[in-house]
Amino acid sequence: MEKRVLNFSAGPACLPLEVLKEAQQEYISYGGSGMNVMEMSHRGKVFDGIMKETEQDLRELMDIPDDYDVMFLQGGASLQFFMVPLNLMTKYKKAHFLHTGIWAKRAIVEAGKYAEANVVASSEDKTFSYIPKVDADVFTKNADYVHIVSNNTIFGTKFKGVLDTNGLPLVSDMSSCILSEKIDVRDYSLIFAGAQKNIGPAGVTMVIVKKELVESAPDDLPAMLSYKTHVEKDSMFNTPPTYSIYMAGKVFKWLKKQGGIEAMEKKNAEKAAVLYDLLDSSDMFKPLAAVEDRSLMNVTFSTGDAEKDKAFIEQATKNDMLFLKGHRLSGGMRASIYNAMPKKGVEKLVSFMKDFENKN
Image 1 (cartoon, rainbow, N blue to C red):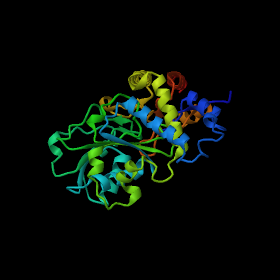
Image 2: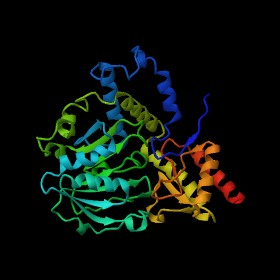
Image 3: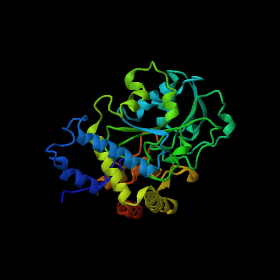
């Protein structure tokens, strides 16, 4: 078997080995078609079957109600920063935002190019190490929706529970936490997520949105930026990212084999506890995120000494534990432990951290 490293990257992230092996077996000829999925027409019966099955598996995994549309789009979550306001800012031309990091900031900037992006709270004062607590009444009724980033990849924080938006539609960027724990889709009016963390390889973006919001969107939007376009054409208005969708479908089936999202949430909590327990007891390594707002997916930490951090990252890399360097804004280290990261991988990292601390 080929060598495999432990990939702690924030994204693109590791994929389940079982999924990679299945894709390898089907690489030359998928389902006896004589073609790789990358080669076949997206209008053909074979890929149409892949697309329909992928959506159905996602709906089952997340218990997505019938009054929600599911789209598989391109452009990453970054395109959604502008696509969401174009389609949803229909009445007041205003939305409320919670500024909890870079991805929230980018969404704020993009929405501000089109209409009013009102920032109701921010955690920038402490380098986004916590989630600001807000009362529902800050979300005034003269807005079209509230936007949050459910999990903050760079700073390792996460919204816990469901935000009270005072009755306004809630939009969430779940790029780095979707499918990692049980949520009620009904608590959100729109969810979007880039694939390259828990869904599959980069190239496809999932959007789950209430049908009524799609129907009330303006009719004069550019075709590629209109949710109506993509819903009416079943995400195939133009050639979709066929192979990324196929791989996402493989991951969905793998998740079902694991017992679904509830089972995955339990495993993720156990993995995170192994790492956070070490951080809470260590004299060298310190967690960067507030205890009450810690992410299950992205664990940020530091020794407090830039040179020691650098040495740790270099030695970890030599031991086949890759991409542990933290983002330039947060510094230190970051271990991204998405669904496909096995518990043994986290345990190996913790063992290495203990050894590094003893020697230094």
